[in-house]
Image (cartoon, rainbow, N blue to C red):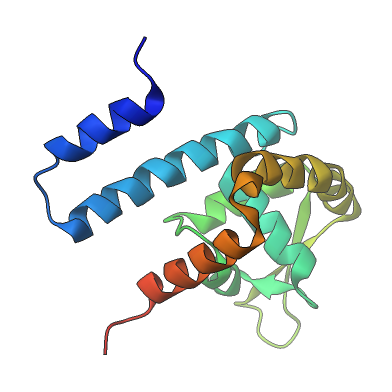
Length: 156
């Protein structure tokens, strides 16, 4: 069986794309691998990463949020946030109510069962992150975070 490092070296030498394309593809591969690790943790709670993200957004908010506010804070865009919220509400993890002043606005809040579910996931999710990225060490993690943030910035 071929060693992982040797396999990566040979794959890198076959690349014909630009450096930007190679980095883009490496980011996609890395994101996929890291996401699969978190999916396994969330599977026990019957949550998708997107549902987990919504619950974390609501836990961190100091108030109830409108659907558009939730969508704007999400890590990945979901084209049907309303249906996503419907599923969480059906499970009793969130509640929605029309705002008193403007009846067109529906506000969403996390429920106590939603908070309990998240609290139970905090340590397993952190443990998964440590397993996935802890080997990089604090300095490399800080550098990687800076590079990723720079990549998200619009060029001048």
